[in-house]
Every structure is written in structure tokens, then in C-alpha cells.
Length: 351
Image 1 (cartoon, one colour):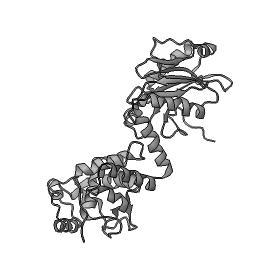
Image 2 (spheres, helix red, strand yellow):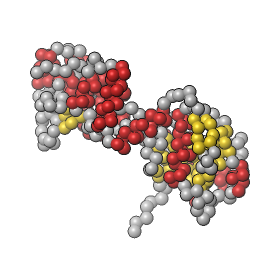
Image 3 (cartoon, rainbow, N blue to C red):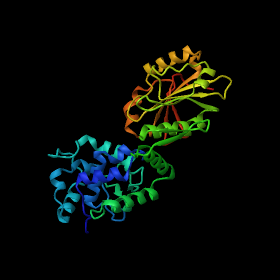
Image 4 (spheres, rainbow, N blue to C red):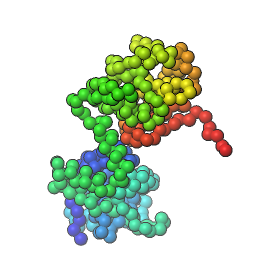
């Protein structure tokens, strides 16, 4: 059997980062170092769809840099056979420790490459010592060394279009729209129909999404009171609307990126929103400061909401800040605009 050509481990990981762009569900599990090693080993032993060769997670543990450098078919086939033997001996230079097989199997395989259709499995007993995993054939083709540049980018896009589900594809597209660097200004349509121009950049795109996508979905009758740039430069403010609900805007104070009001209920509701591209989320301390600001205007806590807006649940900014988000606040994601994550500070009622 002729084995497929193998790229370097670094090139495998580089391609994974392009195949699975920001916004891909479980992206971290598909692009991390362990995922690259899994794909490399599958290519190395020829575990491809239709080949009847299947990889065991333990084979990833057993691989070494020295072995990976030996690329002739005879050596690779011999290692494939030897690495299937059920030994748990220490291997000098092994890619993973003896007890890391489960993390390979569960994190990067089950919740990453398998979940996104890049790796297929065969139905064998969970206690079986046989190999279970292989690269999906069209995914494996993306690691052909001759495939490069625009041809690779087009092939990766075609694979995503065919194999990621529509929701996942939409999420990728939405995130890419928010992270693409461009010199073009961002124009946002306010709830009253007016248009405002914001500086180029991901934060402006996210602010636009909050006003145009979040507000109409989650507020009955939204109004914009305050909108600022990331550098705290005011884009727009509505003093008339603010004063009509008793709120005095003081630009010298540390205000959030966006202040919305929902005038559609029996009493108006203030919504403070922080737009997070890197940091600046609603923490407990920030929440208390904004509650005090709202109280000065006569808004009790039950008429105030707090939202931190992110590009995506898989974005580094969310992973970095989620552990310090305020209880009783919300997180909203531009890539999944119909959903709102609540950090409930009270137990749910049991009927």
C-alpha cells in the first residue's frame, strides 16, 4: 500500500488554522497542537477513509520527532504495525505521556475533529484494542503538499461548505465579518432610522451588530442613548431621550460602550452594554458602578440590565473574560444573534 505524503507538523497545524477559521464550533479542539499531531499520525500511517486503516489514540502518544522524520513507506508501515501493540512502556521523546490518551480521544477527536466531520469512526466495542479513527477522504486531501495558496484556500472553503452544517457555516461567516481588518468605515443604522459612521475595526463591527441585531431581537421598543468608539470618543448621544427618562449623560464618567433603553414595557429599562474585542467586559465591580449611575437617575436594579457583547463563544476574548463576568448579567454573541447567555444570580423556580 502506498502511503500518502506527509507535511511537517508545523504545516499541518498551519493548515488546520485556515481550514477551521474563527467561529468554527469547537475550534480550539481542532487547531491545537494535539489536533495537529492527530492529523499528522493519521497521514503518517495512512488512516484514511476507504483504506481500512484505523488509528488508535495511543499511537499519537507513541509518536516521536525522530520517528516523524522517517518518511519512507517501509519505515512508516513498520511503525504502524509496531505502535498497535498494547504496551504502555515509556518512550523517549514521546509526543504525549502515557496517561494522556483520554485527552487525545475526548478533546481533539470526539469534541473537535469528529464533531466537525474531519475524522470518521468505525463501530467497534469501546473496549476493543483495534483502531477506530480515520481522516475523512476530502479532508485528508487538504493536506496534499502540492495544494497551496489560493488553491488551498478555495479547497478548504469548499470542504467547509459541504461538511459543516448550515448553522456552523453561518457562524463562521458572521465572525469573519467581524474580524476582517479593513480600512472602510462602519456605518450603523440606529433604532430611529438615522445612520452614523464609526471608525474601521472589529469593535465597530460588533457595536453595529449590537444595535442592528441585538436590540430589535431582545428589546420591545429600543432606543439608543449613548454610543462610543473603543477609544471613548462619542459617536452619538441622545440627550433628549436620556432626559425624558431622567438620565443625565455625563461624558466625563466612565460610561459603557453602548446605552440602550427599552421603552416598550410598563416602565423603561436601561441596558448597559460593553463591546469586547479584547477586554472591558461587565465584571461585578463594573456592574455595581453602573447600578449606582442608574440609581442616580431613579432606576432601581430591577429596571437595569447588563450585557457583554462578543464576536463568538470560541473567540479568545470570551475565553479570557468569561470567568469574571458579573452574575445577573448577560453575554451575547454576534455569531449567534438569536441567543442570549444568562449568568443567573438566583436559582430557577421549580413548578
